[in-house]
Length: 219
Image (tube, rainbow, N blue to C red):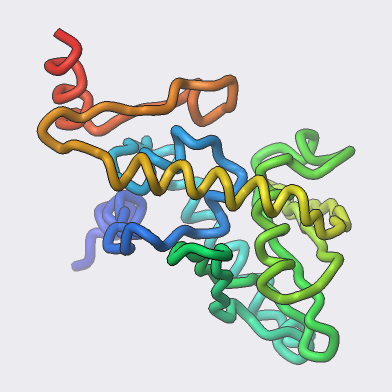
């Protein structure tokens, strides 16, 4: 007999996203993160709790539920892979746009959220940076961020305008992270970016092996 509890826990603990990415590949989902968190994600040394990973799985379920609606499938391309090169470099963003209108190219990004209050009046800054990359990929000047509250599926939509300056700032941030990754010394590991006031920095947890190596270096 199949142990359903064990199967769920195994699925929750899966963590393969981005593990084998080349150093010059970045994902739009990281566009709104600070340099430190992008750097740590690219190294693959961030530790996520079961609660966080479970929330990610719920987000995936909500995405798939929306994308499986007949009216959505009829009118939108679903999770098409797009690439956006950073000018004058070999760096690039690659990601899947949740929904892209088949006629207009209009982009919709779905965000599952625990409490809709945090996005009720305006979209979250890091989500704006992410969808800004998607807009550049799709060559559109407006897009929708659709927030879905996890426990009751209540929604809130924000229309976002393309921001060229924000995109250029994102490119520059990625370049700095890339240079830090190129210069990273595994024998003497060091995080070149200080913690900031963002949520990810405040809640940062690292895998034990990497944390131990950092501590040894400091001592």
